[in-house]
Image (cartoon, rainbow, N blue to C red; front, top):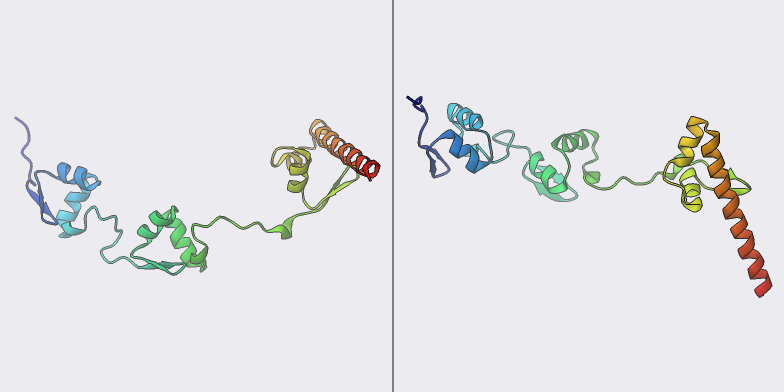
Length: 169
């Protein structure tokens, strides 16, 4: 004989569900959350994605969100990111791309060519992102040879273009 269910016909926000499992599936929560809400007397709150019955409103760039969870869903970040930004006082930067800080960039000279940063050199030489930093960190003669060969090719191409420009003028 199958065990008898203790909690049947559970009413949540005006809808009657035959079991906690059916209520959980309909509301997008696990059945034990429905049973906890039944025990605690807050069935109307189950499935509303609220961490607390009275969530704290969050204002990000002038828009007011009813809770940190709602803000995280709208801005496509984690709830932890919302709380971290709140603690740091940077809610206005939440969900935006990080800005480039050129203050840390160091100029680099390769084969007589000067670049404002390693990343700029990689772009100009057609190398993959971080290649120069890895070559430097590993101390790899092979990788550094590739960097210098690309720099010499670029220098030769620039000299050729300058010579053709002088001849055309």
